[in-house]
Image (cartoon, rainbow, N blue to C red; front, side, top):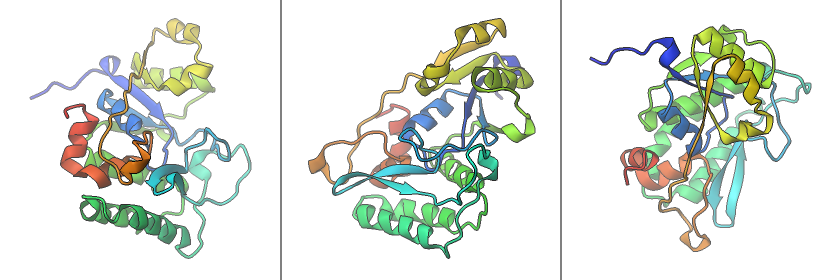
Length: 243
C-alpha cells in the first residue's frame, strides 16, 4: 500500500477550468499530486490568448474553434459567476454536429462519442461546472486520478504570483508545477521568499494519426482529437510517451 504524501511533499498545479483542454493540460496532471481549479479568477474572453470557453479540432480546412456559448458579463466577473447561454440547446447541437462532420470516419469515433454525448446532455447553468465536467471526463478517459481542490474552498488572496503563493501556503505545499504561459508575470523573488520551488512544465507534443493527413499533423488541438483518432487505451499510452 502506497503511503500518502504529506502536504509539503506534494506537487501542485493551479489552473482555470478550461473547456476540453489540449494534451499539455493533462501532461501536467500526470506530474502533479493536486490540481487546484481556479474558478475564482477573472473570466477572460475575446482575446487570442483566451482558450477558456473554447478549443480547436482539425477539419478539412485545418484547425477550427468550437465554443461554449456564455452570457455577456462585466469585465471583472469571476469565472464561477459566468453563465452558459440558454439558446434551446443550439450551441450544444452545433458542437456535436461539428464533431460528427469531421470525426465520424475516425477509427474510435463510436468509442468516444457516448462520453461526449453524456457531457453535452448535462443541464449546467454555469460555465465553469460544465467546463470542469469536460476536464473530469478527459481525466477519466486518460486514467488520471489527481486530487482536485477548488479555489472557492481556499478563498485565495492577491493576484498572479501572490495569489499562487497564498494558495500554496494554505495547502501547506512547497512545489508548484507551472505551465510556460505563466512566465510573462513570473517573479522569482516572491516564490523564494515563501520557500516555494517552481518547476516549469516540459511538454513535448506527441504525434499521432489524424484525420485529413494531407494537411499534415496539427498539434495543440483539444484532447478529443487524440481520443477520436487513437481510442482510450492507445491515447493513455501516447499521453504518457509509451508509444
